[in-house]
Structure formats: structure tokens, C-alpha cells
Length: 266
Image (cartoon, rainbow, N blue to C red; front, side, top):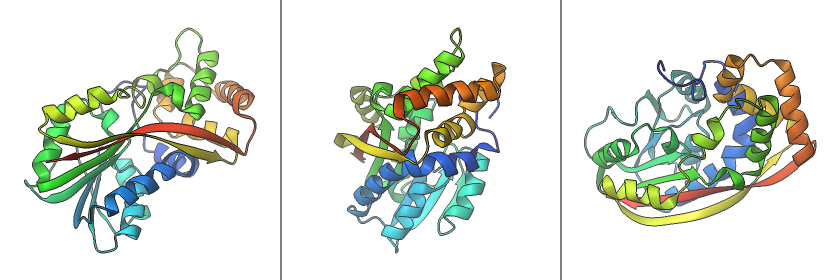
């Protein structure tokens, strides 16, 4: 992972915090949605990109028992944890821009909130198209604007309060940096896909504790490295928790999160 900005790095200790604090609240609701969409296509061979710790992987294996799932992630630590969480899949470390699979090997490629991280999205989408069989589909989601993700609005406000001169910009620029459906559609077309569906989808996240949610963001995402490089410590967590609690309440808290879901065909 050398050469990657501190706002984007993933360390070996982060996946466990990501899995504990963020997956149930932020990612599971959308994994359930993508799984239902995938199952309706009746796939036999699924490739998952940017699989993380395997929340979507697990749902796919449970909902489509006869399917063969190959789960990949660029980050070795994510692959290691995902292998234990969803052992029914074949796990591989892989770069989405250079997939180690033959042409036409899969009839469905899925990706949950991963395409925003691809440095060259058209190149990655072109690789997806290469490994899809004729008639195959590419199904993925991407976050909408930051303003439509209530948890992360509160988080970013806390970071800006803690670092008024130089706040970490990971969330506005990366997870929420690919939030224009027209741009996504154009990139898919440039890679040779036909876009069959592009839908805005708002689901609710439910967190038992705002403090735990803040801990997940500060220790289970690349914000951790950005905070450390700015000399932040326990005081930063206290400021972020206070700001998030002011905006959301101490918890339990329910808040809307908006994404876009795309289905494209070869």
C-alpha cells in the first residue's frame, strides 16, 4: 500500500474495528439489498471486488447456496479476516485493475462501496467486463453525497472541530467522491457496459451507541492514519464523540444513508 495518502491507508489492525463497529450499522443494510438483487439474477459464478471483511460475501453464500463465490480485496488484512468470516468463499488478494482471472470466468461481478477506491475506474470496469461471460452483469453500489449520510456528516463535523486548520478529508473525497450518477454511467459506458439500472436508495442505519460508532470511524477506517499524522490522540476522540453526540444523541440512534445502485450488462 505504499504511495497511498494517509487519508486512504488501511493498516492491519483496522479490519477488526471496522467489522465490530461499522459493518452492522453502515454496511449490512446495503449488503442485504445487493444480495436480493444478485439472487434475482440466478448467478452460478460470482466474483466480488473490494469484499472487505465479507459482509456481502456471507449474505451471498447464505441466499444463493449453490453459487460459487470468489471474494477479493486489495488489502491483505481484509482478506485474512474475511476468510474466517465467510469461509465458504474462495478468497484472493487482488487489484481490481489487474484481475488474476481468465476471460469470461464469471456471470456476475459484485462490489459493495468499493469502486470509489479504484484509482482508474474505467480501467477497473474494463477488467470487470473482461472477466464476465457473455450476458454477464456488474452489480455495485456507491455512496451518494456526504450531505445525505447523517452519521458521516456528524463525523466530519467532529473532525473539522478537532482539526480546524487541516481536517482529514477522506470521507468527502473518497467514499463520497464518486456521487454523481452521470459520471458513473459515463465511466461504465467507456468500459463497454450497457447500464440497465441506476437507482438512488436510502436506507437507515441503527447504532446502539454514538461513541462506539465514532470509535469505529476513528480506528477502523483510513481516518485513523490521518488523525495520527496530525498528532491526534484521545482528545480527538473526545471532541468527535462530543460533536457526534450533540448532533445525533448518545444512542441508540437511527439515521438515513443514501447510496446509488447500478446494474450494468456486457
